[in-house]
Image (cartoon, rainbow, N blue to C red; front, side, top):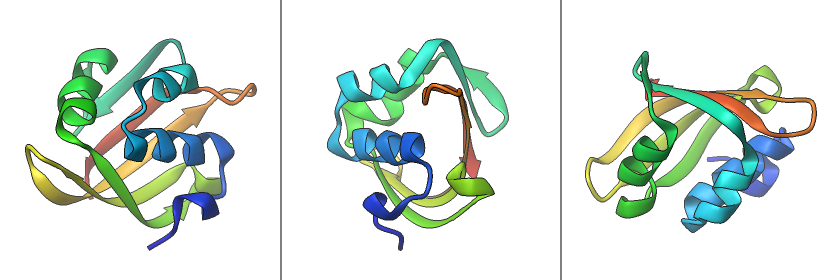
Length: 107
């Protein structure tokens, strides 16, 4: 596993830290206005999805590997609803260090 502090991309590093800390404010501050996301190829509402899949159920990302300059991760993701599963995450990061889109799905 890769420790979050060792992740290459600083925005993705902050994203993982915010998820693992359950820090909604830090998480929201990382997103651009109008940020988008998808889960298993289907676009989802970011606020609704993150509440259900991360914040209300103790979501946690244990990073197994990274690629694409740190903007693509393979993660053992767990939460109280679904348990643990191997997932892939891809991030689009703006020049000023915000996430404009993230995609996740089973790896």
